[in-house]
Amino acid sequence: MNYAWIAIPESAIPHAANPVFQHLLDTYVSETNKVASTWKEFQDSDLDYKPPEKSTNVGGIFKHQLLSERRFFGEFLHTPEPAPEAVLPSSFTVDSAVNRFVELATARLEFFAQRQEPWWMEVVPFFDVERQRIWIFWRRVLHTAHHRTQLTVFLRMMGRNVPSTYGPTADVTWTGADPTNTVEAAGRR
Image (cartoon, rainbow, N blue to C red):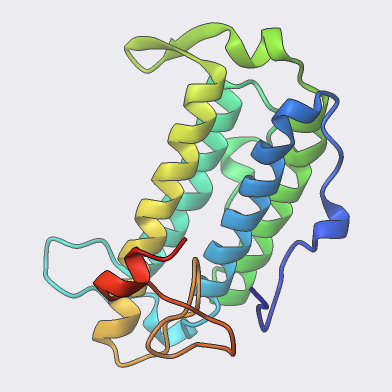
């Protein structure tokens, strides 16, 4: 897929010390790029938007993403992280949030690249249970995808374009895109 904007280019992804784990780095960068592209569809005036009253607003989801990634990675995987009070940009705008999100993700890449199999497989505390570090990493990626999906729904409700994340959307397509929306497409080999 070709994206109109890429926050972290493939050339910035370090090589994993153990090639078996390269997919973690590649996927983390890919997911970071998708989140950043989704956030960039919002305007500063949208930060207080929330559909129903019980929802978190756009700015709250951005802040949660920044703070909870810092916690997941810092507390459970022991990545070098800034102090919690230094995570959020002092002037909170869409651009400052996107830039901070990309900056924090980029800073984690070399740390993850250097980890070897025993480190990834080690069981460590995770809230009130214990899990392998690799499980915690993937849980974080899924958590991130969950919040990105919330925001794409918000964009659709606001009548805004929804960027491509895993393939074409109603707003973004390209020659050669082949979405699986029919039984025939599902049967292709």
